[in-house]
Amino acid sequence: MARFNDRCEFHVVLGGMVTGELEAPIGKKADYILNALPRLEQVTGVKMGEPFKASLREGTQWSSSVMPSKAVIAFRTLMPEKAIEFLFAVQQAHFQEGADLNNPAIYPPIAASLGLDEELFTLLLAEDRLNTLTEEDFGIVAQWGINGFPCLAAEVGTRFYGIAHGYRNANELEMLFDGVMQVDPTSA
Image (cartoon, one colour):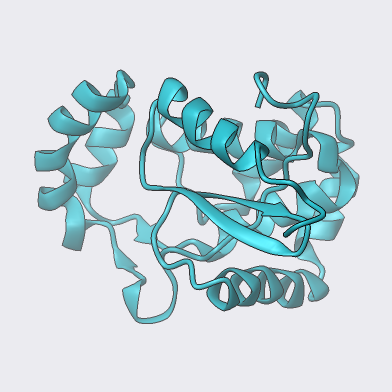
């Protein structure tokens, strides 16, 4: 974002990676995730926190994208300019500290740390309309044909471009992004 913030706008749209039939106790996927972590850490350079690994071994946390998506959308509704920072902070809380993303109480302090009124955020997070907003995001992503996450896409003129599906390092993203930035929006 820092490399391209002066040339384009960034928006977070949530796809609902783990919803419906995919929702389950994390323990059902724990062995797979724990076995994949060394490779993931090597490729990304990010080390997962011991509390996260402990929560995998315990296996009782419910794996679902619904509550964290609702929290990000609530934050985005109130403070769109910091939505990506909020998403990153939520990921840090989960993957470093082992926070249970289905616990609505973890989100207001994160929102407050980014300058949003905690009470205002909590009120919006509890509103029924947030379910509709979340389903709308999931629907948009499905309409775009995105079914793998993370994903980075760009809209230039009237065209939509998939830039990255899955992990890419910053240099790879910059190269891919530069290519899309060369498209003339009047021809798209």
